[in-house]
Every structure is written in C-alpha cells, then in structure tokens.
Amino acid sequence: MMRRWMVAAVAVSLVLTACGREVGGDDPAAGDDTGSEDTTDDGEDGAASGVSCEVDEIDGDLLLYNWSEYMNPELIDLFEETYDVSVTEDFYTSNEALLAQIRAGGADFDVIVPSDYMVEIMIDEGILLELDQDAIPNSANVDELFATPPYDPDLAFSMPYQWGTTGIGLDLEAIGDDDPAASWAWLFDPDVAGALPGPVSILDDPREGMAAALYWLGYDPNTTDEGELEEAADVIAQARDWTATYTSDQYSELLLTGETVAGHGYSGNFIDNFFGADDPDRYTYIIPEEGATIWTDNMAILQGASSPCTAHTFINFILDAENGAELTNWTYYASPNAAASEFIDEEITGDPTIYPSEEVEANLFFLENTGEAEILFTDLFTRAQG
Image (cartoon, rainbow, N blue to C red; front, side):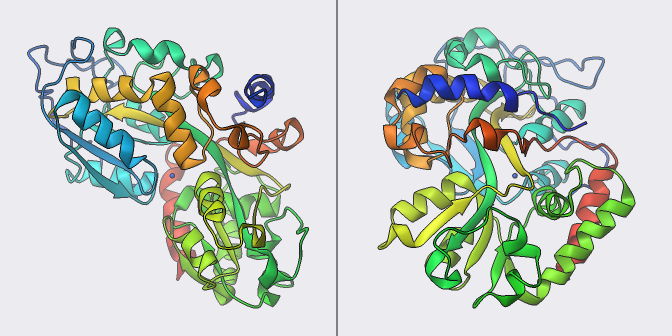
C-alpha cells in the first residue's frame, strides 16, 4: 500500500503555515566504535543503541554527507563559529549511492541526510546510531505531522530536515506553452517529449526515475510486480531518444542554460534557480497530476561516527527555529520545523509549488522500502539508461 501518512494531514499544516534521493553487499560497513565512552550494543532488530551526549557538546570536527546545493553555507559558517569546529561537507547523488558507499566502507561521515524509505532500510541494517534525545531539545520544534513517521516512528534514529516534491521543470519559451499540462508526458510521451525542440533530463536515481515512469503508466511507485517494473524500465529506455542525460544535481542548470527544455528534479532546487534567472517567468515547475513523489529528507548519524556528540549538536542547531527558517529560505524546500514557520519568507509559504494545495496532495506518495525489490529497481533502471 502506498504510504500516505502525511499527505492527507499536511493540509492542516499548510493552513497554519500559509498564514505566513546501489544495492549490493550484505553488511553495513560502519564499525561499532562510536568515539564515546558509552559504547553501542546491537538491538534485537539490528539497530544500534546510542551514545550519551550533553546539549551543545563537541567531541571533534564534523563530517557532513549531504545532497548537493542543500545546505545554506552561512549556516555552516555560523555553526563553525559558534562551536569552534570545522565542518567538511561532501555530496552524493542518490539514496542508493549513499547506501552503497556506506556498505562498501567508503563513507566516513558523522551526519548523513537520507530520505524516508532509506532511513527505514538503514535502521533495519543497523547502520544508524540511536539518537540521544536529551541532547536534541530542539526536537520539540518538529511539526507533529513529522513526529511519528512510519519509517522511524519515534524519531529514534533520525530528525526531519526538509520536505518537498519531485516533478518537472519546464522552459515555457522553448515548449511554446504558457500553461503546460501537469503531466509526465513531458518526459515520456513520444508525441510530446519526442516532439520537443530540445532534449530532457531524468534524475540519476533508481527509485525516483522508476517512480516517474510508474506514475506515467498508472502504477504504484512502490510496486514489487516485476512485470510493472519491466514496463517502467521500457518507458525510460524509449525516452533515451530524447533524453540528454541522467543527473541528480545539474537538472536545473541544464534547463537555464538551454541545454534541455524539460527536466526531472526536486521542487526546491528548480524554484530557487528559477528565482535567480534573468527571466524567471520563462520557467515553471509542475507536479504531474498522474501522481508524484512527496518526500522527507532526514538528519541521521552513522553508527561509526567519529564525532557523535558534535553530530547531535549539529542536528539540534539545524532544528533551531530561526536556523530552520534560514535553511528553507535558502533551499526553497518546505520545512518540517513548526517553530520555524513564522520566520520563513511569505513568498515561500504562499507558493503552492512548495506547499502544495490539498487537491494536489491527494496525488502525492512516499517512496517505501520495497525490500528485496530494491535490487530490481536499481538493475532495471541501470539497464534502461543504456
């Protein structure tokens, strides 16, 4: 069943605020040493118990592994100045790439920012450190709609960072349509996408890429039916004729430079880049009516983190009301921080492409952990890319 735990309820939150992303290997690579005197023990479900940290405790510099263009550099500067530490940020392109690197032992980081379904996978595999809730008092700022998510019901291993949708950015001048249909046809319909005056781009992300094709076909984006997944892969393969590239970090730039005329990507990145364009009205972001992904990215700490207490302090810092607002005002993604809403720019809280209407919400779905089918999603998507 599609997870719609938040979709129906978000409407209530929007009323309040508007008044204002490779599966392989068997074992996680993270070690058991947390860098604290309070060592971890494996729980019955493979999850690891946490460490004990004081509020604002620092036990080393911070290594942050994040999506690109997803952190206000001024917040990094402020954190470094406030706590007299250094922050090193590196980037990944998909949840699957993140997981593969951790499993391979190549992710020596403290804080990571996985999406909802990936948090669940990582909890099951014992990759994440259980949080010391007392060290994160600003968790009280989390909107109640994000406080008990099914992928981490007690927020025992993660704290929400940002949320948004995955849709399509369009160059209105190039496509010759000031009021384009909200449809995946712009990526997958041969009579529409195949007739565009330029190519398109698709996210280099197995779950998001396959989900887009599944929405277009009228299927559940979390299906484990091999026949439906094969159909989705065929749709993506057919689209190679008019697809310039698969990218999870350059899709908006390609659109603005005219190298593509339509792009698959995340709401905030498109909207932020459109505002900064010479002619913002030339571009638009659409949420396809056939269905689209709604997601929550979350801050979590790797079990083998070198600086687990600094990581807790960083999470608490981001959950501060004004810092949370600064993050959203920079990223143009919606905030799961209820206390931040009064500090968020009204142009953001009032934008239906950032905070969707109740009608649009009805067709938004979370990507779920599909278990063993995750391998199939990745294999078919890779094959479809050619």
